Length: 330
Image (cartoon, rainbow, N blue to C red; front, side, top):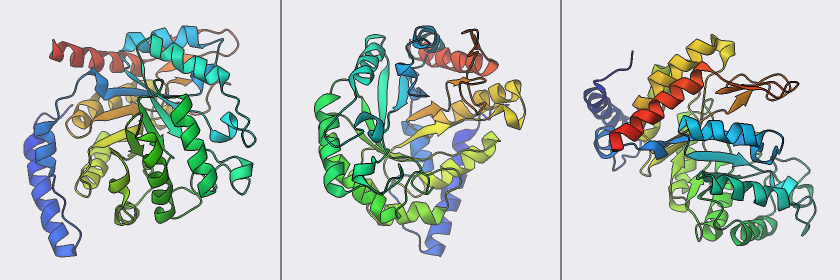
């Protein structure tokens, strides 16, 4: 089912897309889709996984992390809210998180750290509030000082087109990104937040017009769709607008849309096609199960009552693709 004639299709799509841009007055970008296909040669580091705060689950991580290693997962996307790490100004609750990040590093994982979650003292009481600029800069300085060596890339925010993650405008998001980038780029690359699959091309352009690409090392998109062809269509449209290399820090499919086997088939179909277009993809997400995570996007089923973990068909599909990338490199 995986389409093999990607390069020819992309070349035609790129020409059509650029012609449409000329007619519409949209800005032309330096890279084309055909150039992207020619330049990317994916390795196992293409593959990441969303784990949230799992590293801090001391009763589960010894079961889960070896499974992720065995699957060929290279990168973990972790998410610790600022409001959790600094519940009141100047008082940090970070000992377990630092220990957990070190554990993951010792096991050979690379860490993508999401910087998000405004505490009450820095905003209006909502995690999605646009934080006070001084408090935000101070927190980024603390992260830079205390997590250097544990974090391999910083992701600034999440899905800023959604009010539950960002209550401001595209311009206010870029201001936060700029401030964070000035500090955090000293220790690791900075990744812009990925707009959700519900975002429009007009929203993407508003971010770009506000200077997004001047303040990050990589741009990002979360192209959630049920069909792999629809994912590729979104990614190709995004690529036509941007100059920076692209990461996808969230992509997945729920079994609510068809069952475990269809989830595995989706992963099998979409990953090789994305590998010709973007630098990294982080599957959303690691686990599912009653009382563990409400959405059934997982690679692994976890039973809260018994403590058992069971790899799902999507886990096997992920592992097969990871092994193919490893074999290609040897």
